Length: 361
Image (cartoon, rainbow, N blue to C red):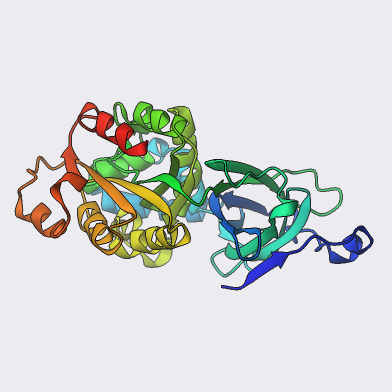
């Protein structure tokens, strides 16, 4: 991935160095996903990624009927169109826009952050000199920086995003979403679909309070899920509604036309490892608490990471949604060579709250 360094230009050069505005048409939109930044000592700069998607909202009834038919077949025909929540389905219906150049304004500078690909996504890495990042303090645990898309003249719309710049050392929580902080019933696919597309999202009791306590002590959060990017906005609204701390989001790419319902909401190892490993390598001096559930592959994924990064993965907590015991063969295998005091199963938040708060100190 190419890295673009933005040096501090002389005032006389500013007009020549600024990139052109984003090439969005009036019927096209961009959504930015929250990412994190780290301090690059060698260059005295903040290094970060910008990730987003360019799309055109689609209200075509034919496409909607295709989505409805796809979901109905997964629920054995037990689905009516008026049962669908529009906020959940809407982003599965959009037209992805490729070849769109995107420019943002961040910390007083305009920065070209990529060109959208065939799926509408763009993901590029950049760095800005620390002297230009006036709102960022490298000694602060976390700096949340807002930015916005630079649009053409007379386009009054606003598309905003945020960047979480983290200190070199400190504690981060990497958290799953489904059945870890949101009751989804992942082990029953028909219930999972209903909970995803037809019902209000329900928080796991006590988790938001626990996460807020950790955030107040300086812990940063990274939400890593097998849910698709199309559910980003409903998930962000869920986090805000129930008071979960803001953090970076790491979901998976999904294409309706060549995927099954199992592909849609399955927490695949490849997806989570591809998101978590770069975080561990980006912040080698930070310590990480991994929180997930026993419904799918979190024990195996987290156990593997605890073995590979023993100095960084300080604790693993698995919400027990399968009524398993810690000495079950599955867990002894998943956490082989991981000390027993570095991981635990829990059903209720009070079982881990005290340990988690102590670990964050």
